[in-house]
Amino acid sequence: MSAQKLAVTQEQVLAALRDVMDPELHRSIVELNMVKEITIREGTVRVDALLTISGCPMRETIIDSIKDKVRELPGVERVDVQLGVMTQEQRQALLGQLRPGPQRQSPLLAPTSTTRVITVASGKGGVGKSTVTANLAVALARRGRTVGVVDADVYGFSIPKMMGVSGKPTIIDQMIIPIEKWGVRLMSIGFMVDEGEAVIWRGPMLHKALTTFLTEVHWGDITDLLIDLPPGTGDIALSIAQTLPRAEMLIVTTPQSTATGVAYRAGKMAEKVNTPVIGVIENMAYYLSAPGADPVYIFGRGGGEQLAKLVGAPLLGQIPLDPAIREGSDRGEPVALGSPDAPSARVFYQIADAILAG
Image (spheres, rainbow, N blue to C red):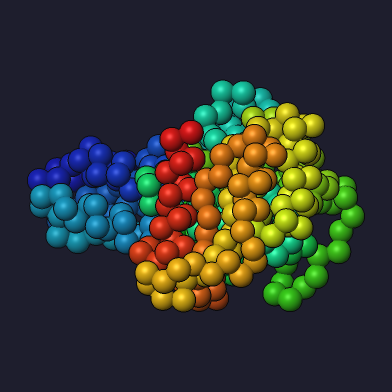
């Protein structure tokens, strides 16, 4: 780097750039060796930086962040940012920083990982498992956690719609960068297929997709990873138990006894694969026709309590039938974010707090 001696120095500029984070990798661009050169001339600071790939979707965000930080320095009148692209060797060095060690293993799988992994399971479809996952992820993020979500329901993925996300993730060589929305890092097969396309895979392909989501996605320093499981006790649930033996499970049910009986099978599977069940969530528990009105138990009552006793775990919350849930899901804004004072949203935050206290 070269510079003409002015009020601002290269060292000051470099120090300011340490606060510029790559918006996808969540690390300083200085730490990632993305700053190639700094030139200072007559009040103008030029920063030459390197993108990981030529089609980086966050290039404008990086440019704006560099300009904002450097403009704060005394004596800077103008900031010029020029972006280039890393060579293959530079990208490999970057990957080595993000995944140190000869195996380049995802930190998520390391025995020293501190990420809490929680699978969200149900015995049958249609009980609101994905709704619980999306809203719980947002609630945890609003509590200051760094949260990731794996949409493992490959055939019936719905997390992208519920979180208001479209498009494809950035891929740096063999490393996939999750898409982030509402402060939650997301990965779904829905990002990999065209809209309306059916996923027609056998078991080995399902296992490969899940393994990719867990081992080849750069989750970064997340504190919690929620995994939205497909209904039942099939291949995906077993693969997660084998790949992430530290995982815990939440079971979602509805109040009627039929749903409870089916959900109990998920609890039995968890027992057989040594996955602790940390709680039961009862969705569609009741309906409030007006504030202060008596609850109407449209689908019966007591199923959540019954299931909790059967699996030996606490009933963490009873989520009411709330139009705000459907409205939020349709517009891609979970109710816990868009209507935090709604009756259902308050229960999601109650569940989040119970998980954090557990």
